[in-house]
Length: 376
Ligand SMILES: Cc1cc2nc3c(=O)[nH]c(=O)nc-3n(C[C@H](O)[C@H](O)[C@H](O)COP(=O)(O)O)c2cc1C
View (cartoon, rainbow, N blue to C red):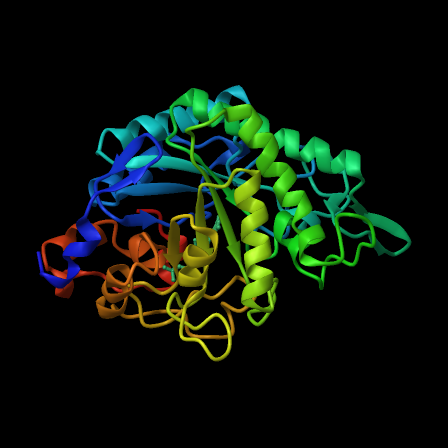
């Protein structure tokens, strides 16, 4: 092990569990679960990342049991796993067992796409999208502006799935509150123009996510980590912001902590970039500082080019070479964050953590476009 990378391999407390290191496999949609059911192949895929040395493994986003949670847009949202229903949960049990067998810890990520869904999409074409605002196309309401009751019902759906995760033996539950999906659509003033208590200032824009977290906490009880992923950037807009200042960020984080969040998973495209003008601190560092909660950083760890969302992938070069880990090691030493999540690098090379631990950096496979289609 190289001395500098040693900090990545310190154990870390996570709820009732102890992670063997600080390397996290980031949540990544892989579309290998026909009918929403994770197959044996899915279990093998996660097992390989556990064998490769990751300490904590997040599942890809898995749909909650509300009928509006899913989208089908071209093939972009096909074969995404469910986190409900007997067959799908059996599939997740298989994944959990496979991951635990490697000494890694497993946490599922719960997902609702919000207004990405439109009326007419399967499974039930009669169910429109649900989001903060109404969207009308050709005179038809394709996305329904959520009522207070809808907010409550979707929060309950999250809570049911989180309870299932605890009963199943997962180490915690993760919420996808980032990248322009449902909870983030409420955070972002661009998609949230509401004038009721769910829209307006940051406190109101945060209310729906807080409701979700509160319902989950009521359902799972204490001592079960709730990990909340948020981002400034959106799939469709890399320059978007939900918090314009540290003060706004502090309000958002304080409310989420009060609702029951234990960990923040801070999604950036480059983990080290300053979050606000006139201060070098990254969004993860600000988050840890302002929330008093541990933070996970993600974004171009180990790679020299940032992640591109599906909206931009065809327009730019997406291959990325192996990059120096000095900046992440230094940030961990500064206590900017507690865990380092790795996405594409661990997709390209399941043994990434083990190769870093044993100093075999030259053996690490770089990330190539073909890795998105491959399933190793
Ligand atoms: C193929 C792919 C699928 C992804 N799916 C999800 C997802 O389901 N949920 C999520 O929160 N982020 C998702 N992301 C974002 C990653 O978790 C991560 O934040 C991003 O790739 C940046 O990390 P990286 O630079 O290490 O790849 C995905 C990324 C990729 C490359």
